[in-house]
Length: 326
Image 1 (cartoon, rainbow, N blue to C red):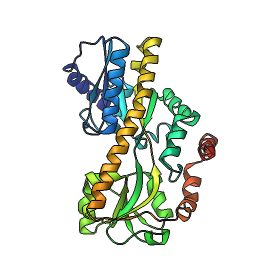
Image 2: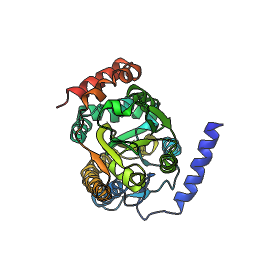
Image 3: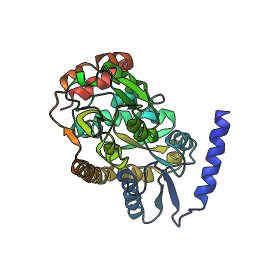
């Protein structure tokens, strides 16, 4: 039944995509749930521009933003079937499929955004990209997803003790739920769209997210304390359908891979601009931003989370290599 539903969705997507035919010899259809203008969307557009230039107009990329082709779970399945060629996806939906993606979803695995960049641009990142292929995908590049920090409407969080008993919304992820339990808070998984009203009415005390999401969602209006603990710095991934990839010549495969790699600096520059603009807006609104915080107790509390979720030798090795990266 699941297969039939997936195929039905794929056929519907094919019909929609057929109307956007290009003059190019090969048009790669790319999906993103983020809105037009978002850094990841613009990065894949830039990748398409590079490909078109470097192949003399033979290969183009058509980006379908704003979840036009479905939410990430749906588009991941469509990509495997080759209906969607390229897909920018969060790491979470891949956690149960590509084991290696769990590692970069762990709390405090990265020391900061720069550390994350060095890790994902290096051998560890290449190994994680390669891990997608046995599952029907070709990993091309990693984009930024920002640093996630805690915000709430009750009080400033200056230490781990301040989280005790606090009701905090998290994504529906076992790692996230266990993270909050380890910090003494009450994890409350719920859809993102319900967070604003839930904070406003007291169903939850707060949530956690990056600067742009905290600002664009309006959560700063109802949760006026933002603590820069940066417990999660999770990259996002750009993958290609293995079925689509195998249809390309080796020369074209190399062109696609290089164009994807060259889109990363563009994405990072736009992301930094977006973060800065969101931070300025939030601070101007009078939010109390807590920057002086000792992260060590937070990090130490994550031992139980790592013990539960980092069980295989493969994952233990990746964690060790990430920590050893300067």
